[in-house]
Structure formats: structure tokens, C-alpha cells
Length: 241
Image 1: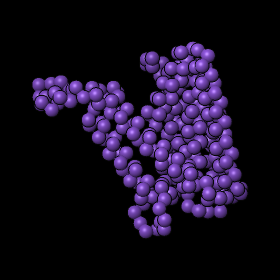
Image 2: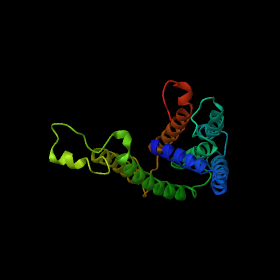
Image 3: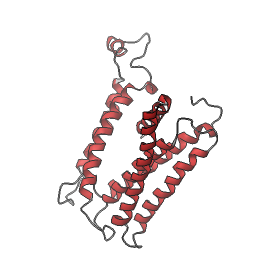
Image 4: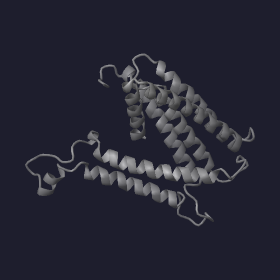
């Protein structure tokens, strides 16, 4: 989530810095498509996963996504907010979180709150491909990120291997740690987030556990983005440049 939000900021900053007609065209189209895509997912979620007023949990998840959508736009009017934040960044977070919401609802066990089961298959496939792409990107980017320091450390007790690690383009410890967590996540997807014989067919990330994990990821992403936007206004003594 941290890397995704950072990547969105980098794309927005790059387009604004170019200050050209093609860049502004991409910026405007990307913003419009992001918000329209998020609204389309919300509409589809209401249709497929909230067919009756009795589906209160699903209605809460979907309606809350609309509330957060207004918050993602409203936060841009906060004085002294993060300068690199804009409508494109808010739109990208909005459509991504709407996808997480739609994906989470599709992972719930079959109930009367699911109008059709035909949409669940493509959601699982898209989610699986996105998970592989996100894991690969996060593993490489976090391993080479300067936030964790240099690849090696200097000191009197450095061994030859530690000396050699200083010339690596990534942090081996961080790389393998992130890769280990990624492998565990993929394992949970393949085992349907449980080790039992209840599942009668092969599924990717189905069940209540998967639903709550996905919704938790959505809420964390929304909170993380909102905080990064308002952090300069709250912590005025810190340098966010």
C-alpha cells in the first residue's frame, strides 16, 4: 500500500512537472476515468451484492466507499496540504479502493445478497494477477528503497560478505523479508485462507477471512492516503519536501 501510494504521487508529480499538452491530457483523462471507474464499480456492487435492503453489511461497505470518495476530494481543499496531491492521486486511490471493495464482496460465501455468481470468476482472476504484479513490484522497490538505508553498513566488525553487500543494488535482508511475506500471502490465496476440507472446488481467496483482509487493506489504503495529504498541515514543523 505504501509503495502504491508513493507511485501514484510520483506519476502525478511527473505529469505536472512536464507542463505540456500531452501531459495535461493524460492527467485530465486519467482523473476522469478513475472517478468514472470507481462510480461504475460502486453501481455494479449495489446491483450484484445489495439487491435487497436486508443486505446491511454489503450496503455499509458500498455506501462507505461513496463517503470516502467525497473525503478524498474534500481533503484537497485543506490548507497547507501535500502539494503533490491532486485529483489524479485521489481518483487513482478511489478507483483502486472501489475495486478492493467489489473484490471483497465477491469473496464472501454465497448468500441471498449475491444476485449472480458469474462476476466472481473474473474478479478472482484480475485480483490474482494484480497481486502477482504488486508483490513483484513491492519486493524489488522496497529492497532498493533508500528508506531502509544503504545495502551494507560500515564498521570495524564488517566481514567480507558485509563489505560485498555494500555494492549490491538492494538490501538483501529487506528483499528476502518482503519476499517471505509475499510468499505467505500467495500461499493463503491458494489455500483459500483456511486449511480444511470445506472447500469443494479450487478457489482463489474466497471466504469470510479473505473478505475482511481485503476490506482491511482498503481501509488502510484510504487512511494512509488521507494522512499523507493532511500530514503537512498537521505536523507543520516537519519538512515534507
